[in-house]
Length: 173
Image (cartoon, rainbow, N blue to C red; front, side, top):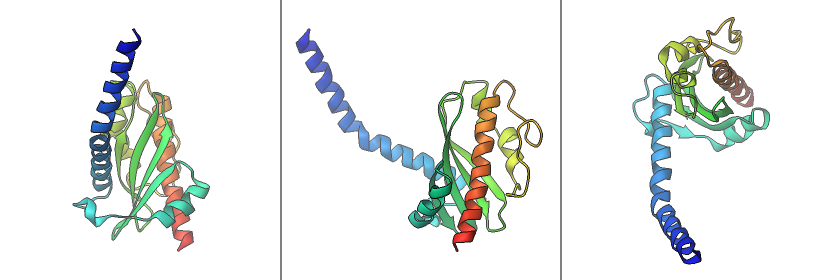
């Protein structure tokens, strides 16, 4: 029995070491794709530049911010908040005018057919054109996903925090 456990452990360790880099590369590609989708007019991830200094400043006030990318059109802010089924990672593109230009879900573990609808344009499109001065309340300004209020509130929180992050960035410059 101990021998079987040892062999299984070695096999799992080898599998992890072989696939670790490929998994990390795939996650990076998914993030890059989401960033491009979040900012209309950006065609390639190479047009974006990650700004570690801005990330650090923004994260002091908004800990859900993971990354901040700059481009000639504005900023793409990646955030992660807890949804119903686990973390929801989202890229929010904010133009230089302070309005949300695009939103893309990077990853989530929400319930298929309910919370997974967070990816749909009908839901995400509600945030386009919103600025920090706009009210963003689920059930009032934002129509919740049917049967997925927790997910709807989590996504709305992310957009609010991205807009707040933009305000922090503007004050820092």
